[in-house]
Image: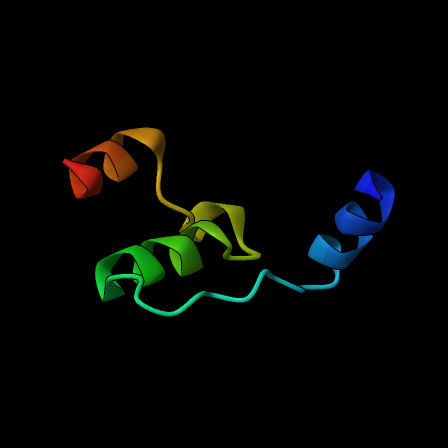
Length: 51
């Protein structure tokens, strides 16, 4: 299961976003899922967003 999950992530597949999640968290998830490492937020940036 973990191996298949790793392959799916490499292919760009992401989990479905469930209903009723605030848009700010959806935006954060999508930023964290960016295929380009340099475009992902740092832990410090994530901490500021969540605060």
